[in-house]
Structures are given as structure tokens and as C-alpha cells.
Length: 154
Image: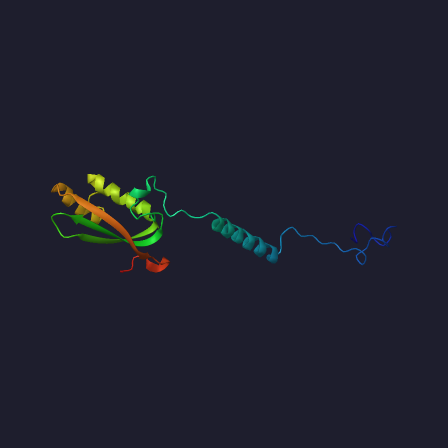
């Protein structure tokens, strides 16, 4: 200010450091940043609450492995293999994502010989298949898993 309007300048009485206050801000303050962040989170949550989550997206509801709950995530599940010749065998597993994805992986291991040793369940199914023993697998959810359940014995 003093350089542009020195004391000899005719406008010095109007434009000087005592009469004019100048400020400049290009960044939002912390409160605005936090409020914007919180609003984004709340908006996402509102959207999730509005759209009901489907528990099953099977084309044929009768063939759903969990009777309408195949989209459940983070579950501890049980597969029971029944045959006419042997006692039922039970296998317990954990699914982090939707059960249906885990179920699809199991079915893939039952169909592809190169995946026969992928799980203990697939090993058992391939043993039965190689012996031409008919079998039936039933699935059920034992319970929901916590986020901390990873790799813990149940």
C-alpha cells in the first residue's frame, strides 16, 4: 500500500493502511472440510439404507443353496455330503464375500479335475465321483462371522 499510495499521493487520505483491510483465502477452513466429508458419508449411508439389499439373486429360487440367503457375506457355513453308502460327512468353511461366490468356487472345484485338491470338500467329492457313488450336498449358514474372525479356529 505504501509503495502504490505514498504520503504525497492525492488519494493517500482515502487509501492507506489504516483505512483499508485486505484479506485473501483460497482454502476452505477445517470446519468446512470436516462438514463436507461428514455429509458425503451420511449421504452414502442414506443411499444404502434406501436400496434394500437382496438376500438372493438366483434365477430359480428353488435351486438356491441356502434357501434364499445366498448373498450373505462373512458367514461360517456348513456343507453336509450325504450318500447311500456312507455316513454323512460335514465340512465347515468361512466366506468373507458373498456366500454365492464361495459356492460357485466350490462347484467349479467339483467339476474341474485340476481343481480336485483345492479344498477338503472337493477332495471328498472327487473320491466319491471316482468311485461312482451318488451324493447330495446340503448347505447351511452356522452363523455370521465378525471382521476379526479371519483365520481363527471356530
